[in-house]
Image 1 (cartoon, rainbow, N blue to C red):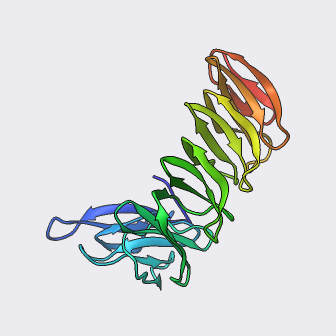
Image 2: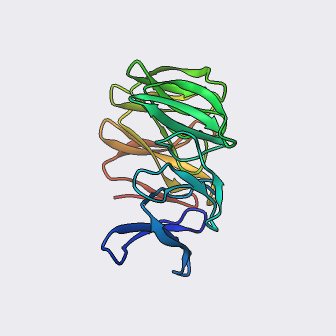
Length: 231
């Protein structure tokens, strides 16, 4: 079970046997009763919910209070004051947290904003847009993926991965088979990245650009408090 903003999504059957969604707190209590037809996890204090089948989505806070009733259907998770939505087949746009249209429906796909940018898809490729709808990073990647814990993005070209930041600066060219931030350095908010190159594992520090451990191990490395454990 995963918690976001101290709330975890749950589903249960009502008296008619219909699935209803709600949220529990870390003590296991129903902080927000199971009454919704559908719901998303919380993101930055906002969660989208649909009360009944066919009704439009609403955004609530962790107390269940309605923050916004968007005019648009098919909303996606809130992030950094922006809401992605789809209002016609295959096109994504963005509103702000006052439900004002900020970016027209022009993208083939789009994800939540992280900081000042969001991954968007145009002509079959992914790039980064800013909050004005201007492309911060050209749409040329096969995929752009958020890395938990910071504002770095994993990029992919021809199944090779690298790192870019939220300004579109290339930190590491897409040359690796995999780049995963599954290891903690010393601070719980400070991550290092597991690299996979030529079927060998190594460790990289994205903030300094330093390869701490060259990719040479057959098994994945667990890195904790400055120590690496592998076989």
